Length: 181
Image (cartoon, rainbow, N blue to C red; front, side, top):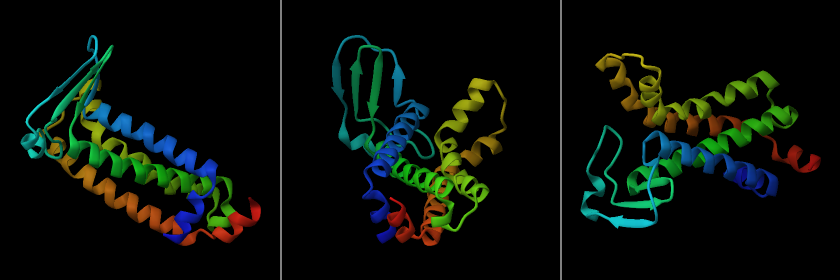
Protein backbone atom coordinates (compact mmCIF):
# COMPACT_ATOMS: atom_id res chain seq x y z
CA UNK A 1 0.00 0.00 0.00
CA UNK A 2 2.90 2.33 0.80
CA UNK A 3 4.31 1.83 -2.69
CA UNK A 4 0.98 2.66 -4.28
CA UNK A 5 0.72 5.87 -2.23
CA UNK A 6 4.24 6.86 -3.33
CA UNK A 7 3.42 6.19 -6.99
CA UNK A 8 0.18 8.17 -6.75
CA UNK A 9 2.01 11.20 -5.28
CA UNK A 10 3.37 11.91 -8.76
CA UNK A 11 0.82 14.22 -10.45
CA UNK A 12 1.27 12.69 -13.92
CA UNK A 13 0.68 9.20 -12.49
CA UNK A 14 -2.42 10.40 -10.66
CA UNK A 15 -3.82 12.00 -13.82
CA UNK A 16 -3.14 8.88 -15.88
CA UNK A 17 -4.78 6.55 -13.33
CA UNK A 18 -7.81 8.84 -12.95
CA UNK A 19 -8.16 9.25 -16.71
CA UNK A 20 -8.07 5.49 -17.28
CA UNK A 21 -10.45 4.84 -14.38
CA UNK A 22 -12.90 7.50 -15.59
CA UNK A 23 -12.88 6.16 -19.13
CA UNK A 24 -13.30 2.58 -17.90
CA UNK A 25 -16.20 3.64 -15.63
CA UNK A 26 -18.08 5.24 -18.52
CA UNK A 27 -17.43 2.20 -20.74
CA UNK A 28 -18.51 -0.13 -17.94
CA UNK A 29 -21.83 1.71 -17.54
CA UNK A 30 -22.22 1.85 -21.34
CA UNK A 31 -21.64 -1.91 -21.52
CA UNK A 32 -24.29 -2.48 -18.87
CA UNK A 33 -26.55 -0.13 -20.86
CA UNK A 34 -26.87 2.21 -17.87
CA UNK A 35 -25.65 4.92 -20.25
CA UNK A 36 -27.26 5.06 -23.66
CA UNK A 37 -27.84 7.42 -26.54
CA UNK A 38 -31.19 9.09 -26.76
CA UNK A 39 -33.15 11.43 -24.61
CA UNK A 40 -34.55 14.85 -25.28
CA UNK A 41 -34.30 17.84 -23.03
CA UNK A 42 -33.43 17.65 -19.37
CA UNK A 43 -35.21 15.43 -16.85
CA UNK A 44 -34.51 13.63 -13.59
CA UNK A 45 -36.88 10.86 -12.58
CA UNK A 46 -36.61 8.84 -9.41
CA UNK A 47 -37.97 5.41 -8.60
CA UNK A 48 -38.45 3.52 -5.39
CA UNK A 49 -35.07 3.29 -3.62
CA UNK A 50 -36.05 -0.08 -2.14
CA UNK A 51 -35.65 -1.54 -5.65
CA UNK A 52 -31.89 -0.81 -5.64
CA UNK A 53 -31.14 -4.40 -4.59
CA UNK A 54 -33.45 -6.00 -7.16
CA UNK A 55 -31.46 -7.83 -9.82
CA UNK A 56 -31.88 -7.28 -13.52
CA UNK A 57 -29.26 -9.90 -14.36
CA UNK A 58 -26.75 -12.12 -12.62
CA UNK A 59 -24.66 -9.19 -11.37
CA UNK A 60 -26.66 -6.16 -12.47
CA UNK A 61 -29.16 -4.27 -10.40
CA UNK A 62 -32.25 -2.11 -10.85
CA UNK A 63 -31.76 1.63 -11.41
CA UNK A 64 -33.37 3.98 -8.90
CA UNK A 65 -33.21 7.13 -11.01
CA UNK A 66 -32.94 8.27 -14.59
CA UNK A 67 -31.11 11.36 -15.76
CA UNK A 68 -32.01 12.52 -19.25
CA UNK A 69 -29.81 14.97 -21.08
CA UNK A 70 -29.97 16.03 -24.72
CA UNK A 71 -28.79 12.95 -26.62
CA UNK A 72 -27.98 10.90 -23.51
CA UNK A 73 -29.85 8.85 -20.93
CA UNK A 74 -28.18 7.71 -17.71
CA UNK A 75 -29.76 5.12 -15.45
CA UNK A 76 -28.50 5.53 -11.90
CA UNK A 77 -28.09 2.18 -10.20
CA UNK A 78 -26.09 2.49 -6.96
CA UNK A 79 -24.89 -1.13 -6.93
CA UNK A 80 -23.87 -1.11 -10.60
CA UNK A 81 -22.08 2.20 -10.06
CA UNK A 82 -20.28 0.88 -6.98
CA UNK A 83 -19.09 -2.20 -8.89
CA UNK A 84 -18.04 0.08 -11.74
CA UNK A 85 -16.05 2.38 -9.46
CA UNK A 86 -14.22 -0.52 -7.80
CA UNK A 87 -13.34 -2.19 -11.12
CA UNK A 88 -12.45 1.17 -12.69
CA UNK A 89 -10.06 2.14 -9.91
CA UNK A 90 -8.41 -1.28 -10.02
CA UNK A 91 -8.14 -1.20 -13.81
CA UNK A 92 -6.72 2.34 -13.69
CA UNK A 93 -4.12 1.37 -11.08
CA UNK A 94 -3.20 -1.80 -12.94
CA UNK A 95 -2.71 0.00 -16.23
CA UNK A 96 -0.74 2.74 -14.44
CA UNK A 97 1.71 0.28 -12.89
CA UNK A 98 1.87 -1.55 -16.21
CA UNK A 99 2.77 1.75 -17.88
CA UNK A 100 5.48 2.27 -15.26
CA UNK A 101 6.75 -1.29 -15.81
CA UNK A 102 6.93 -0.65 -19.57
CA UNK A 103 8.59 2.75 -19.36
CA UNK A 104 10.86 2.06 -16.36
CA UNK A 105 11.50 -1.70 -16.32
CA UNK A 106 14.61 -1.29 -14.15
CA UNK A 107 12.46 -0.03 -11.26
CA UNK A 108 10.00 -2.92 -11.49
CA UNK A 109 12.24 -5.90 -12.05
CA UNK A 110 10.41 -6.70 -15.29
CA UNK A 111 11.42 -6.81 -18.88
CA UNK A 112 9.11 -5.09 -21.36
CA UNK A 113 7.24 -8.23 -22.39
CA UNK A 114 6.44 -9.08 -18.75
CA UNK A 115 5.02 -5.58 -18.31
CA UNK A 116 2.69 -6.14 -21.25
CA UNK A 117 1.61 -9.51 -19.85
CA UNK A 118 0.92 -7.85 -16.51
CA UNK A 119 -1.67 -5.63 -18.17
CA UNK A 120 -3.75 -8.57 -19.43
CA UNK A 121 -5.98 -8.84 -16.33
CA UNK A 122 -6.73 -5.12 -16.52
CA UNK A 123 -7.62 -5.37 -20.18
CA UNK A 124 -9.62 -8.56 -19.73
CA UNK A 125 -11.58 -6.92 -16.92
CA UNK A 126 -13.11 -4.71 -19.58
CA UNK A 127 -14.76 -7.74 -21.10
CA UNK A 128 -16.53 -8.54 -17.84
CA UNK A 129 -19.40 -6.19 -18.53
CA UNK A 130 -19.21 -5.88 -22.27
CA UNK A 131 -18.59 -9.41 -23.52
CA UNK A 132 -22.28 -10.40 -23.81
CA UNK A 133 -23.01 -7.16 -25.65
CA UNK A 134 -20.11 -7.77 -28.02
CA UNK A 135 -21.47 -11.24 -28.79
CA UNK A 136 -24.85 -9.75 -29.62
CA UNK A 137 -23.31 -7.03 -31.78
CA UNK A 138 -21.26 -9.59 -33.72
CA UNK A 139 -24.31 -11.79 -34.12
CA UNK A 140 -22.64 -14.84 -32.64
CA UNK A 141 -25.11 -17.35 -31.27
CA UNK A 142 -23.93 -18.55 -27.91
CA UNK A 143 -25.25 -21.45 -25.91
CA UNK A 144 -26.72 -20.91 -22.46
CA UNK A 145 -23.60 -22.52 -21.02
CA UNK A 146 -21.40 -19.93 -22.74
CA UNK A 147 -23.60 -17.08 -21.51
CA UNK A 148 -23.48 -18.60 -18.02
CA UNK A 149 -19.71 -18.23 -18.00
CA UNK A 150 -20.08 -14.45 -18.19
CA UNK A 151 -21.67 -14.44 -14.72
CA UNK A 152 -18.27 -15.14 -13.19
CA UNK A 153 -16.33 -12.56 -15.21
CA UNK A 154 -16.91 -9.61 -12.89
CA UNK A 155 -15.83 -11.46 -9.70
CA UNK A 156 -12.94 -13.07 -11.61
CA UNK A 157 -11.89 -9.67 -12.93
CA UNK A 158 -11.89 -8.24 -9.43
CA UNK A 159 -9.72 -11.08 -8.12
CA UNK A 160 -7.30 -10.95 -11.08
CA UNK A 161 -6.93 -7.18 -10.83
CA UNK A 162 -6.11 -7.39 -7.12
CA UNK A 163 -3.58 -10.21 -7.62
CA UNK A 164 -1.90 -8.46 -10.55
CA UNK A 165 -1.69 -5.13 -8.72
CA UNK A 166 -0.12 -6.78 -5.69
CA UNK A 167 2.29 -8.78 -7.89
CA UNK A 168 3.54 -5.69 -9.72
CA UNK A 169 3.73 -3.52 -6.59
CA UNK A 170 5.71 -6.20 -4.76
CA UNK A 171 8.33 -6.09 -7.53
CA UNK A 172 8.40 -2.29 -7.85
CA UNK A 173 11.27 -0.37 -6.24
CA UNK A 174 9.82 3.08 -5.59
CA UNK A 175 13.25 4.35 -4.51
CA UNK A 176 14.47 3.89 -8.09
CA UNK A 177 11.38 5.72 -9.37
CA UNK A 178 12.07 8.60 -6.98
CA UNK A 179 15.74 8.84 -7.99
CA UNK A 180 14.79 9.02 -11.65
CA UNK A 181 11.95 11.53 -11.22
